[in-house]
Length: 241
Ligand SMILES: O=C(O)CCC(=O)C(=O)O
Image (cartoon, rainbow, N blue to C red):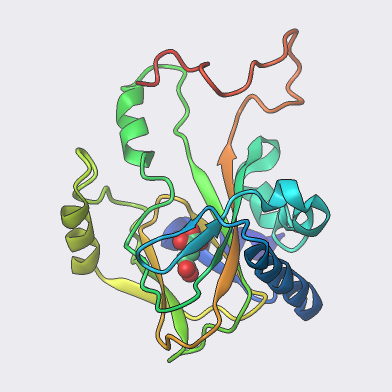
């Protein structure tokens, strides 16, 4: 546990950690093939302008294939160490980058800072937070591909978020120091969902795909002892606007 605690300190300080070899080579290959199969079936939601094709339904379509990635055995100590029983899967999304790819600078949890503001000191609020675990399915070696973070970009609110102004946000991200990493096939990158990041191919010909599990901290988890059953998400947050 000492080692896990140290890595979690690193996660809190840097905003991300790499778990090398989170998946075995066999598991990585199986998932790589399933994501390719999803593309053959036309299950993608779309292919955006920066070269990212995304799939949001794979956990429902093939739970036997993708459920093992949720709370994956090699990530579980980290997820539990951060979120304990309050760790909730928000979504599972796969990506394929079929051609040239330079992702836009973005945060998965854009609303992190805004939600803090909206809570406005209300006495019982807890700050919302999210965690990504991104499983890489190919070697992103130097010259092939990479993932770039704004250095310690989880600790400071970026310009251009409130109101949302993409050029200002992008310029802010560019102006900061960066950390570039080269995850290998089977590695998982675990990061706070509000750190600005940008994936890319350095060689347009590389095959590149990944699967992301998004988690969020939900204090009222389903085993919390309460007389009533929650109604679910839609329409149940009267003060969220
Ligand atoms: O393409 C990449 O490496 C970045 C993927 C991404 O945006 C994510 O994991 O949230």
